[in-house]
Image 1 (cartoon, rainbow, N blue to C red):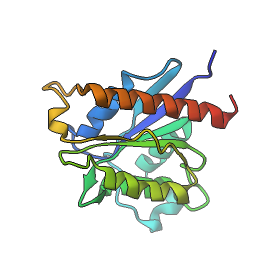
Image 2 (cartoon, one colour):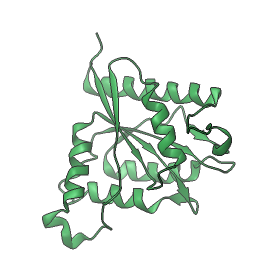
Image 3 (cartoon, rainbow, N blue to C red):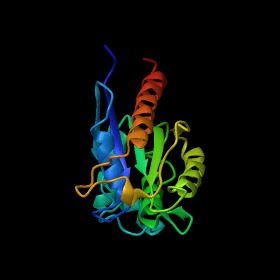
Image 4 (cartoon, rainbow, N blue to C red):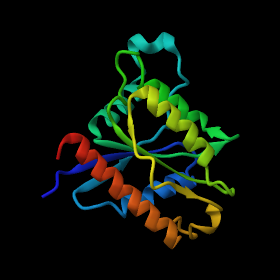
Length: 186
């Protein structure tokens, strides 16, 4: 029997009706066997201030604990102005600090994105992958999941209804779980 895997899904937007949150919610319904996924919230994480590292804000302590409790990370990455959204970058910075207490280190990770545009948030995902290198994470690069023209790919209830997109998302989840088990030596 395969070992269980706990994924932490992190939607990079604060917007309640975020397509990236919806994409992660869809992922929760498509997980491989022996896998669970909880969604984190970036709501309430203050703007990063290095002066506060000695006494981290409670929301940051909670967020870092969620990361540490997870076996793998799945980011839902919105793209703003050709880059990573501010709330997500801010949360990543907090969880990597202080320098000697990087919560991301050694975590298997993947990123997906949904966008109203033609490129599906790919620029933000590629930018985020640069941070994975410095943070010491172990990324899954393929398959890529970029949901283009997102309003057409979700129904009125927020369900991800694109059959091809669902296949890619399911494949990415399987790859992330397999990668996580492999890194553990299982």
